Length: 258
Image (cartoon, rainbow, N blue to C red):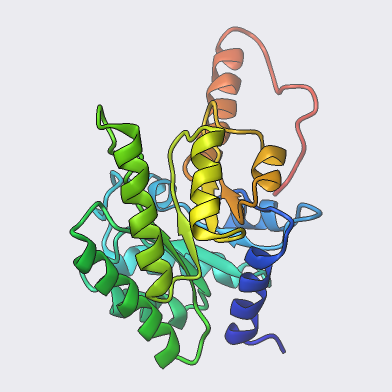
């Protein structure tokens, strides 16, 4: 029988493997089953924005923690694959949030820094790592910085320097990997990987992002799709609705997946 700790070790291995780990984010049981059932998929990742939207909440920890953890738990129960969850900024108590997530079988998580003062952000990372250790699970913490997302008109070199400083601090505090969402160009990714090491930096696929084969060549550990996988599904639903209202029908090639 595969234990939670076993799944955590496998998730960490997938991050340290030279092959880019591709995670198409899910937000409920049926999306988890469809993605997990696709040949080649090795792990699942949830998207907090997508789960919140599916439950009628805006993004940003508005959905109650218990409701988020319950939704993630249903996803975990729907697959034998390792699941890493987007737990936003930890809902005000990072250690307890990670403990509850592990309780439903989660083996990794994103944790946002929201550009809090670095000592506060580091303490949150340490609390998450400590919670995993207390539960006997080598939890795969993906410490995220919002440095690029909130860069605005700041000097790009200063933004990158801040991201690197935060990345080093989070990895030193026990995070397994460092997540830098945003539309980053190749020179920026090269400098991040050079500073933090290969298979330590995670990126997000957004419109205009680097091709996945370029990410792998540069030594990126993993790429995820965040809320964009839900947007792809919703775009298809909107297109069907528009077609139906003008006399059309199901798109050719539609598969029955549930």
